[in-house]
Image 1: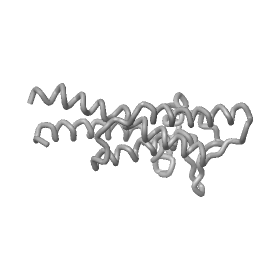
Image 2 (image 1 turned 120 degrees about the vertical axis):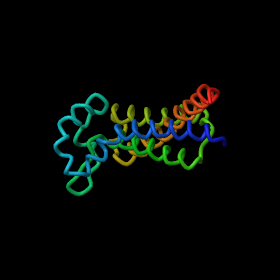
Image 3 (image 1 turned 90 degrees about the vertical axis):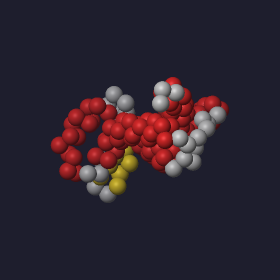
Length: 156
């Protein structure tokens, strides 16, 4: 890999890490009482993304996540994929069938819980969120990185 391509790849990853850090802040803040000062701002911002139903939050002792189990899974799945991209385990875009499959599983869970077929499970919600978050992240990040390297890499 040439120096300019490596630089572009690292630059793209750095910007993504910053962006992802902003998204992951509520997850991290859930476990750091020192950040309690920011809780009202975080709650207000997250309420546009997650319903934050107290019955669906994951609890760890006296702490609980600021997002529901499914959103927490999506965030952690994306973070796991980011780590795998950094160590170059993935370089190809997952097949669209994989993204559609994980989306179908997640949406089926939501639908079946909402129509009363079975009760909400934090574990299953977390797992379906994790699957969609990890595949979805790869589906959007890898083409973006390739596009940037292709378009900007030609200028170096």
